[in-house]
Image 1 (cartoon, rainbow, N blue to C red):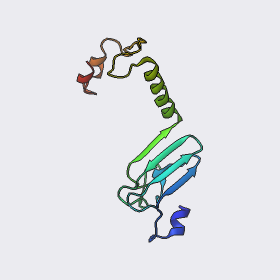
Image 2: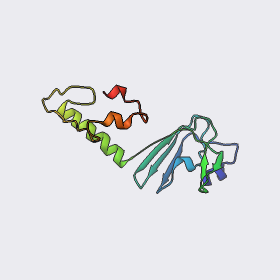
Image 3: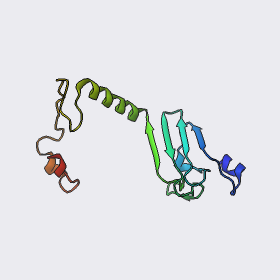
Amino acid sequence: AELDKSLGWWRSVDIHLITSAGMSIATGPVCTRQGGPAFLADGSARTELALNEFGHGRQAIQASDGTWLHNVGTVYGTDSLVGLGQWLHRVITQVSGESFGRPARAGIGLEQVQVLGGAWSEQLQGFYNVAAYK
């Protein structure tokens, strides 16, 4: 909010960098022109990107819990667990040669375990389209 106040309503920045411990881009405001990137690097391991798609990153509404949410468009975020999962996926794929929809090349097969048992499709019927998974 300090950047917004110091710029005034008529000025914007090319790139908005936010360093924080616990903030998010959506709680804004984002002071870029339309399409301008806003980056958040959080000491609590969250990283976000928004492009102020509509150019309304300073306009806000108050949510039912009292927080203010700004019209920054889609916010793309990740945290350390997402990054760890992506890294593990790459390592397993490289070592085994196996990935979703690809057969093993290295002869190291991965076993698929049906967590919901043999009747998984019946349990999910009506909630999700499971035709592609049969």
